[in-house]
Amino acid sequence: MQSTTYDTTPEESSRAILVSLVTDDVKRSGIDPVYSLEELVALADTAGVEVLSSMSQNREKKDTRWFIGKGKVQELKLIADELGANTAIFDQELSGAQVRNLEEELDLKIIDRTQLILDIFAQRAKTREGIIQVELAQLSYLLPRLAGQGRNLSRLGGGIGSRGPGESKLETDRRHIRGRIDELKRQIAEVEKHRAQQRQRRIKSGTVQVALVGYTNAGKSTLLRQLTNADVYVQNQLFATLDPTSRTLELPGGREIVLTDTVGFIQNLPHHLIAAFRATLEEVNEANLVLHVVDASSAMLKDQMKVVDQLLQELGAVDKPQIQIYNKKDLCTPEQLELLPEDDWNLRLSAYDEKDLEKLLNRLQEELTGGTVTYRVPAARGDLASQLYKIGEVISQDFDEEHIVYEVRLHKGEAEKYAYLLEEYKV
Image (cartoon, rainbow, N blue to C red; front, side, top):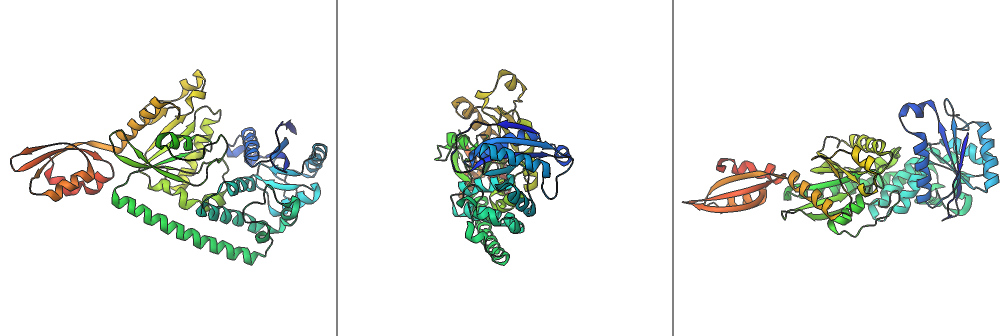
């Protein structure tokens, strides 16, 4: 067993030891257990937990009763007693029985990675929609584990792992919780219906939408703020923003599009969260273009990109036109920059560099604007002239006998929608 000690400043009452179990299944999954544990440290810090130490164990498969085996549980108990820990956070998901057994043996609050992420989401949710989604995810996660949650709910009077639905709801019987889940699903369905109506209005109006996606802390919110002067929360921490934000962005040619920031992804993102946030994440499916924002300075860049691509595939959005934005180039070494591709579909930039932002805006205009087409329209057909202004930017117009000749820079989306009405007037 390996042990690493961290010097951190406590923000709340939880003082934790982090535990990782590396099984053959974990090795086959392609997940880097060392990086995953480092990420768990960052998650714990984000949740306000004081991390005292971490420990990892290699084992062929997990122990069904103790997860890490009885001998290692005793070793964990000694370390916890020595350091004064009151919490153990496991990097993998535990069953209700494992939580109960570990809690009784260790006399510690037991949290797993999923519960920790859910707790962070509970802290971050500000809108009614976000709060509903988080509560649904938490209750869906806890329902099959109620038998192992008894002492956990009353220990320490709250803190990590007890935010969100609250103790009173979680201590009620399964029937009550199932009823609450059904009610939350009904509310989510209303949200989905409302979003569907918004999408239809956007489609009818020809609004073009661009979605920002990426690993958590890649700099999506910073990019949104710098491009649109949006008043959004920006912080160097995991899941700094949770609720999606849409802002209008004016391109160099004067055309306005909608830029939407989505929740950050992370490896092993709890499937309960993906299900609960599907209505929000499916905004990506409606986007005309996806900007995949990558932390170019991260040593785990390829792994983080792979996680995002897998989640986009799960959402059915993997085939959307996509530009890779290698952000934070100012934090990269020359060697790191050299390895990054740069072409029409791969841009290196810093969200704080005006020239880089200008380069991105020009690329968006290029991608979201079609070619230039000339139309020769009868002067008496004013109705057709109005259609021309819908499908693009009218660059010039000249009179030709009883016709008006328009030169139009087409807008993608609108052009595909209305161009058939003007097909016969193309020059």
